[in-house]
Image (cartoon, rainbow, N blue to C red; front, side, top):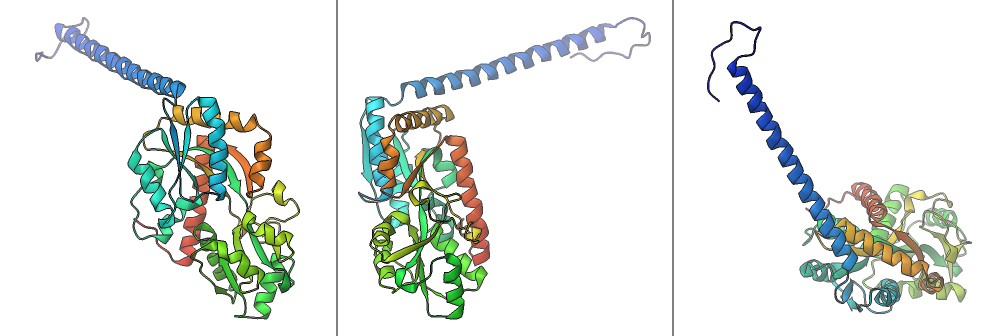
Length: 352
């Protein structure tokens, strides 16, 4: 803009005033154009995301799991995969990648970076990783995008029937009455961290027994080689039915139908042991919210359409617990916050 001399007579607009007004109007036009352009781009991107969600899937979908066949998550993945394949008209392939504390499956998933390759996994598989590994090859919040929770696996605290304790409170009283005589164990990951912190905060004089294969623990519990086990309800149920074990409490926030007569840890007076074990589906980095919501809606549709699914999953100790992307993400955050507090109690620093 050309420099203007000061206007002495302010009663009438000068040429400089007109130039300045013209300059401002030009700026406003540019700003309006930029706003319109950005709005159009956002709308275009949203339209692409919605269109992608409406045409998904375009080929076979793969579920990657961190367990072998017949595990609880494998059972629910295969059952759901069969229903989704019928709805989508495309195959759903189950790929079992056990090993490495879940890292084998997670690495396979993140390496694919493909919206048709999804991770089907308990949240406990990765929420404990920052406290059980010094370094991690992935960023869970960036690389594992919650799509939908499918089930909650019931976690129980059990004791040998021969120990003659009927409640969690009775077990704790016995541990204090007979210090350093009782052994306890828990499934690796979240359960082990929570039980360890509970023992520390309660000052319980018990010994922790680590297991490479937690599937062996129920048999040891029945033989009273260990005296308290925190693990999957389903793995202990046959021995409970045989009269060898007694379930003292479940870690669920509320009572569950498959163990309706068993109190929660909160009802037993020990809410610190509360744990929701969520099993769900995750998408890769960059997957749109529209597509995540679309897949979640399809999962809800096929499960709610077949009332036998809940009873079939109950046999494996799972309760149907459908949550969309936002609610699922909130549930995972609760677990992360809980474990962060527990790690602080145990003096464990999170992996960087």
